Image (cartoon, rainbow, N blue to C red; front, side, top):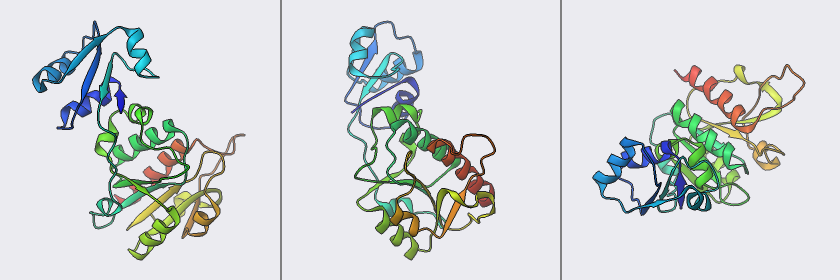
Length: 231
């Protein structure tokens, strides 16, 4: 998998992750990154901007890193804390939304993110770039059936909070203890079965003419309300 951008490259180089190859712009001038590459003795190839553009469909900032495909975590690996805080994504499709949610979740100290295998965006180069390197510090579990995963979490003592335009004011819900917040699909929201599995439905009040928020923005609002209460 190709990942690109200075933030992502810096996070990868800080860790002992396996790097297969690095492609740099011929006049790349970030001394920290160049020094780290030299120190780790990573195979490096210098290319023109046109050549780099062919490898990465986005703002690569002069660096593209070839790494093994993202390694997902098992669900149990997300439950190591006494009172875990998880984000469940109900068939999100936009990699920019996933990347932005990963970035916010990592910054807020969320324990992990759960995404379904089918009909959902997975971790790719765009996700990694949008996360600004946070992908390297966030555990993500890939599950076969989201509803079954919700039931499994309930048996472990989790409260499940879904998000929808019609529900309880999000600030009036208790997010302390074991909690999982569900963010629905960008167009259709949560699926019926997932919605029926929720203990609470949280709604973010809208005061303008637009009646909904972008999925990643809604996730950010929910995450920081939960963090405020949990602190």
